[in-house]
Image: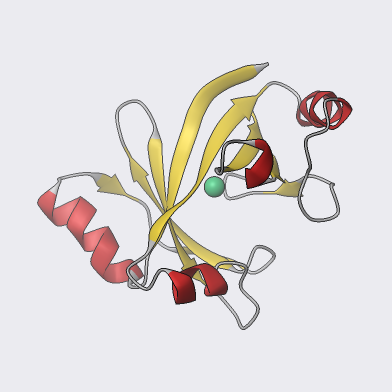
Length: 134
Ligand code: CO
């Protein structure tokens, strides 16, 4: 069921500064910032040869990562995103095994225009997991 590691997401307190470090110091290809109001975040994607890094910064007043940044003022690793063939097959299999899907449990359209789901960190060794349909 599980496919490639699509990205590792890192919450950053200063999006421009973090983007510049990857672009100017590490020589990475970086995307333009994109606001995702439905998710309460602004994202920048760093392209690596084998995967991506998603830089996350709060967008709007009720950002789900606002509290994360309060607890971790320097930022920190936020989630891993794995690709799956079919988001509903993955969701149903995980629920059948007792895993918890966050939010209302319905896939939302993520940063790449594809359906995504988030899984409870307590069911994945303390790591928030995003699933993205391939
Ligand atoms: Co993500």
